[in-house]
Length: 178
Image (cartoon, rainbow, N blue to C red; front, side, top):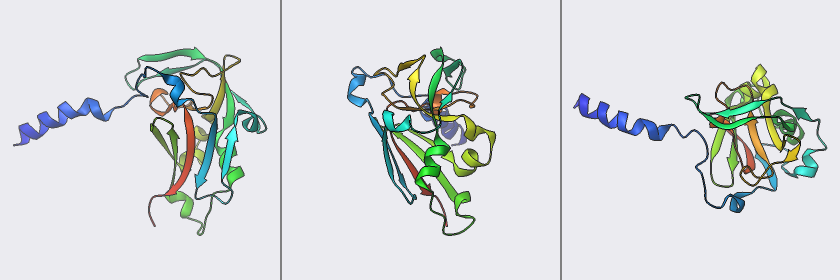
């Protein structure tokens, strides 16, 4: 029985690692033109690229999109955008108790349903938060339809692909436990 369970587990293993969005035939159907910030926030926001440009700007240098196995998904590029933490600070995360934030996750969702998850501590209590950017520009140009007009990039991940959210449409703040 143990061998059967191990074999079934090993056969399922590749399905558990969804490195990035699947390739689609018509990416323009998923293009995101705005991102909504919602969930446990005092001020829900809906922002297009022009609204994002009103926040302090962040630029990256030569970030490549790679899988967990180190395979290159997209050549290194320079990106421009806004820190996710700046947007969350503007929306004002709701805290009924001092420790509530320690129980929160932030879910980035694409228009094709792809999701990436960050903890509140990762964003606000570690250096990683300074590298999680809502991007709208690549190499000085607007993002192409393959990424939507708005995407999320976690620049400090060892493998940037699993949490690269192209076609970003929503950022939700959720409490996972009481």
